[in-house]
Image 1 (cartoon, rainbow, N blue to C red):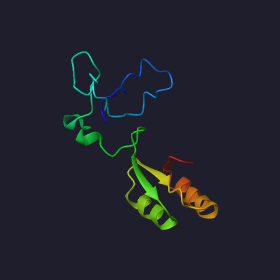
Image 2: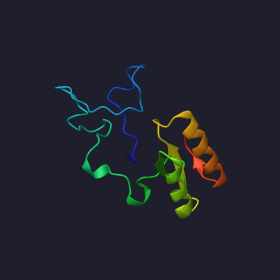
Image 3: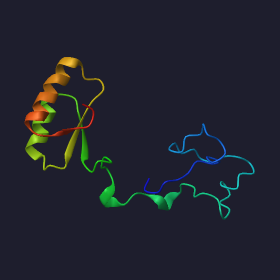
Image 4: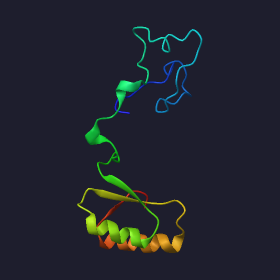
Length: 112
Protein backbone atom coordinates (compact mmCIF):
# COMPACT_ATOMS: atom_id res chain seq x y z
CA UNK A 1 0.00 0.00 0.00
CA UNK A 2 1.34 3.37 -0.90
CA UNK A 3 -0.61 5.35 1.70
CA UNK A 4 -0.49 4.88 5.45
CA UNK A 5 -4.00 3.77 6.25
CA UNK A 6 -4.87 4.01 9.93
CA UNK A 7 -6.68 1.33 11.84
CA UNK A 8 -10.10 2.22 13.25
CA UNK A 9 -9.94 3.89 16.68
CA UNK A 10 -6.16 3.57 16.86
CA UNK A 11 -6.09 6.77 18.90
CA UNK A 12 -8.41 5.29 21.57
CA UNK A 13 -6.49 2.12 22.43
CA UNK A 14 -2.76 1.88 23.16
CA UNK A 15 -2.64 -1.85 22.45
CA UNK A 16 -4.00 -1.48 18.90
CA UNK A 17 -1.09 -1.68 16.46
CA UNK A 18 -1.06 1.18 13.96
CA UNK A 19 0.84 -0.83 11.32
CA UNK A 20 -1.67 -3.67 10.98
CA UNK A 21 -4.65 -2.81 8.79
CA UNK A 22 -8.06 -4.23 9.71
CA UNK A 23 -11.21 -3.49 7.74
CA UNK A 24 -13.80 -1.59 9.81
CA UNK A 25 -16.82 -3.88 10.24
CA UNK A 26 -18.98 -2.26 12.91
CA UNK A 27 -22.69 -1.82 12.21
CA UNK A 28 -22.57 1.92 13.02
CA UNK A 29 -18.94 2.47 12.00
CA UNK A 30 -18.45 5.95 10.54
CA UNK A 31 -15.18 4.84 9.00
CA UNK A 32 -16.89 1.93 7.20
CA UNK A 33 -19.56 4.31 5.88
CA UNK A 34 -16.78 6.68 4.72
CA UNK A 35 -18.06 9.74 6.54
CA UNK A 36 -16.05 12.94 6.24
CA UNK A 37 -13.37 13.59 8.82
CA UNK A 38 -12.68 9.89 9.39
CA UNK A 39 -9.54 8.03 8.24
CA UNK A 40 -9.33 6.67 4.70
CA UNK A 41 -10.36 3.06 4.02
CA UNK A 42 -8.42 0.81 1.65
CA UNK A 43 -10.19 0.62 -1.72
CA UNK A 44 -9.46 -0.22 -5.35
CA UNK A 45 -7.83 3.07 -6.38
CA UNK A 46 -5.04 3.02 -3.80
CA UNK A 47 -2.63 0.60 -5.50
CA UNK A 48 1.12 1.26 -5.38
CA UNK A 49 2.71 2.86 -8.44
CA UNK A 50 3.90 0.44 -11.14
CA UNK A 51 7.56 1.48 -10.90
CA UNK A 52 7.61 0.94 -7.11
CA UNK A 53 5.93 -2.47 -7.08
CA UNK A 54 7.93 -5.57 -6.11
CA UNK A 55 10.75 -3.74 -4.35
CA UNK A 56 12.02 -4.24 -0.82
CA UNK A 57 11.81 -1.06 1.35
CA UNK A 58 15.62 -0.78 1.03
CA UNK A 59 15.17 -0.16 -2.72
CA UNK A 60 16.46 -3.52 -3.95
CA UNK A 61 14.53 -6.09 -5.97
CA UNK A 62 14.09 -9.12 -3.72
CA UNK A 63 14.85 -12.68 -4.87
CA UNK A 64 14.14 -15.80 -2.79
CA UNK A 65 16.97 -18.35 -2.85
CA UNK A 66 16.89 -22.04 -1.86
CA UNK A 67 20.28 -23.33 -3.07
CA UNK A 68 23.69 -22.44 -4.51
CA UNK A 69 22.58 -22.91 -8.14
CA UNK A 70 20.11 -20.07 -7.79
CA UNK A 71 22.85 -17.79 -6.41
CA UNK A 72 24.98 -18.62 -9.46
CA UNK A 73 22.10 -17.63 -11.76
CA UNK A 74 21.52 -14.38 -9.89
CA UNK A 75 25.19 -13.38 -10.08
CA UNK A 76 25.04 -13.66 -13.90
CA UNK A 77 22.13 -11.23 -14.20
CA UNK A 78 22.67 -9.09 -11.07
CA UNK A 79 22.90 -5.39 -11.83
CA UNK A 80 23.56 -4.08 -8.33
CA UNK A 81 19.85 -3.63 -7.63
CA UNK A 82 19.17 -7.24 -6.58
CA UNK A 83 18.99 -8.43 -2.96
CA UNK A 84 18.84 -12.04 -1.82
CA UNK A 85 16.52 -13.51 0.81
CA UNK A 86 17.46 -17.03 1.91
CA UNK A 87 14.41 -19.28 2.28
CA UNK A 88 13.43 -20.23 5.82
CA UNK A 89 13.57 -23.95 4.99
CA UNK A 90 17.31 -23.85 4.20
CA UNK A 91 19.48 -25.57 6.82
CA UNK A 92 22.71 -24.39 8.41
CA UNK A 93 25.22 -26.06 6.09
CA UNK A 94 23.58 -24.92 2.89
CA UNK A 95 22.95 -21.45 4.36
CA UNK A 96 26.67 -21.06 5.07
CA UNK A 97 27.51 -22.02 1.47
CA UNK A 98 24.93 -19.58 0.10
CA UNK A 99 26.27 -16.78 2.32
CA UNK A 100 29.83 -17.44 1.13
CA UNK A 101 28.81 -17.35 -2.54
CA UNK A 102 26.73 -14.21 -2.05
CA UNK A 103 29.60 -12.42 -0.31
CA UNK A 104 31.97 -13.31 -3.16
CA UNK A 105 29.44 -11.94 -5.67
CA UNK A 106 28.88 -8.84 -3.47
CA UNK A 107 25.13 -9.41 -3.23
CA UNK A 108 23.07 -7.85 -0.45
CA UNK A 109 21.50 -10.45 1.86
CA UNK A 110 18.28 -9.36 3.55
CA UNK A 111 18.16 -12.04 6.26
CA UNK A 112 21.76 -12.73 7.15
